[in-house]
Image 1 (cartoon, rainbow, N blue to C red):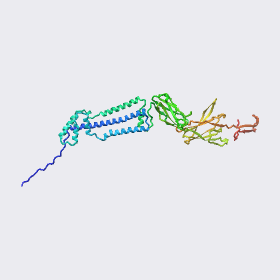
Image 2: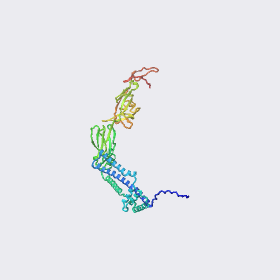
Image 3: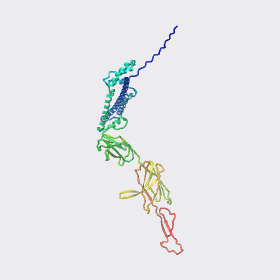
Image 4: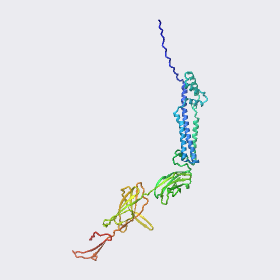
Length: 478
């Protein structure tokens, strides 16, 4: 009996793909480099296309807005929508997609072959063989890769990608920039207002003009009733000084589009005018703008607020105690009339918060037909309340008791924001003198009398006071 021993079957070894040869490596490196160059070129072309669109549309808008028809609000909104909408579409389709997608190797191969006559589809054939799964024959892959590598080595790296479109777009953008610079330097109308009007369609920016009215001061403001307003403006561009005018319209419609000539201030292009609707000043709200040639400023408004005013709420006159006259309280009256030595207490109320208030006691001076007043004394009033102030002074005569030290007074104050009451009325102040008493010697009749030693002398005196009682009579010995 014989035994047959058989050898175990060996498992077939897995087929392994051979490593890339040097020709394949070279071709792969060149294709990857080309893909990056293509991506960079396409990105450059996209950015240049976006710049051409934005700048070209802005230049077209400048020419239309400056010389054909001024854009209204609707036209500016449409121009803005077209500008932004087209820009967003270009940014998405030409720029953003390059970051979201990869450049296909076959596209890069065809771009290389289309730019050179040395290729005979060697790169495309190589990729079709590699990506088509036909890699079982190493000799075929090596031959195709060797042919592709030889063709690639015969062209310059700069010839692999067609950059002619990007170059053309670059020249076009440079041309538009040059046109905008030339227009800015040579045109009498600035392009920047039109650009701003398109980019900000809801603004109130004025249309471009040959003359620009700038730095109008104070612009929108407030004035006190009866106050004049100094308006200044700077004019740029070709114009005549006679063309610079301020045009105002009162809110009540009494004056509509009234022009007033502005005068140069001496410095180049600067003009000013003291605006007034009445001889004394502005008496109501109004609007105004400045114009010169075809230039015009925005319209500004002027509101009128009441002047700071302070009035006497109450006057209390307290006569001297010896007179036995009762105190008097006056309301709704400004004239002060009291007995010499009387104390005057004032309570004033203002229409604005008081910073400080005071009374000026005046003496009237008359020279011919001219009357003037000089300040003799200033009495500061205490402000215990934001709108009220109070103080006091005494009615006095001069040292000889022949005339008043002060004959008039005026009430003044300064508001919390530093404004003074412009309208001040001078009020009369009358002082009634206290007439002196008269004393007469009734007996003896003679002015000189001889009296024996240690004897008395009877005197009879008579004292009279024309206006008040006599409380005490004192005999003084010399």
